[in-house]
Length: 114
Image (cartoon, rainbow, N blue to C red):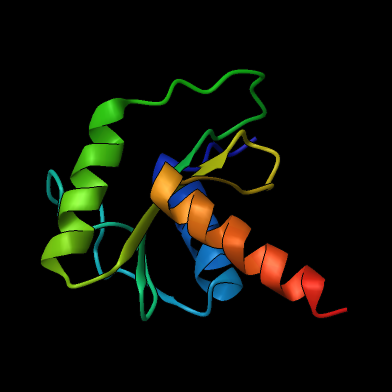
């Protein structure tokens, strides 16, 4: 079987995330040490991390979060997130408490409208 380069899996994840958040893939992300996060939308920068095959564990590095937050700030994006794919094509998002609390507040407002 033909082995695909890791970049194939990364790009596949980035396309999924970009479509989900109505954003776009950052040109040539990953080409330099840290060009920019992988997917940008109007208010968010998302750094994508994926395994090429299904794994039960995913090691998350604090550095990924800090660098993505810094890049988001430099780009004038209000939010940043990490998209994690264990290799099954499902996306899980790691966000900070500030964003989580804003989301929670929004969800409460939406649910109280009913």
